[in-house]
Image (cartoon, rainbow, N blue to C red; front, top):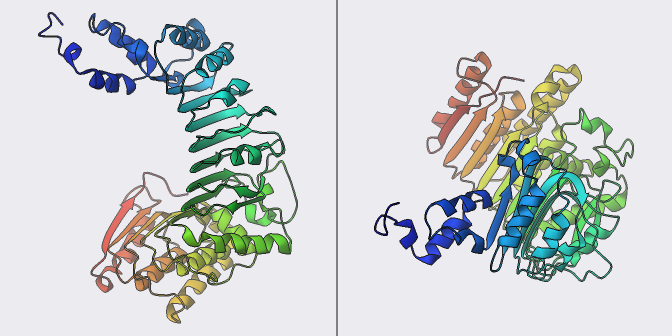
Length: 456
């Protein structure tokens, strides 16, 4: 850039310069210092500092230790810091200055903090001094609040992924965030690798996402909760259904399914009854199985009148328990507008086991009976249905028929098969059967696609 006339970047308004720098990582922001003399020290005042070592090759961390780079940047920085992010994609052993960095940052009005690094390590107590914190994202860490910790009074978003607490500390930490609106717990647990979060008081909570091991989770006070996702880490365990209720293994993948008593039964039904204000609900197949295992009725006592989006990731159509539970929830959602389903690979893989064929037949007969005898209500609001990883097995096709016959205002049906291309004989047969439904439902747009996967 030769002269002032050509240096257009230097003549940009200050707020635009700041927005450009905010969108860059620290490394990219520092590189702007070579643009011109005007830009040389612009980066030292940016309020957002984002260190992402996931884009760095491992050898670079040997030459430039992350802790040293971070600390040097903080020492050179001028002005307030409101956002700090550190992400690494592989084990980092040079974090000796991280505690000093957190101490330094605790003197700034940090509103958003992200710490994602390996291996697992305790978080410094300086974290609990961030009085202005609104959004906290922690990955792969051990958290132990000090006895003097009074809570994070401004925290709105809490994302904990593979974060470990001492027994009882997780619930205490959550309840000490009085204005919390969004809570994500992913493989986060106490020392025994399970949850027992009962009577959680979160009066401002609007969204809760859970994935992991758990025994009991319920909210004593969450009147504003409208979005709920419940996933189980037990998926991927072979024949998990055969192990449910058979034994208690607190260090195994099915610990969440180990309660077999009337109290747990009643709490599950109560849990479902409290979903009356939910607008978005996501439950995976394992959670559906647990709900059905404890005597879920054909229809809930109270309709989910506000529910407009429902998702079932990884549901097995070889399981009558999962399918019947899904049908129960759909039947109890008269104002449902969007339904999304991903078929579990166990539907196909378990078909090779002869003992699973009768249950698959039972599931298909259950769905046919509902359609024939008119037991499935008219879904007068359902406009969109998406089903992924469909294989064309009988219970899957009967489920599609049931939805088509009940959804009177359905405008789009989107289906992705598990097959790799139209050349597949099984894929072609399935699509031909689906297309045969089209004349009976002229107002429905059929979108049929193949996934880039091989049949299981």
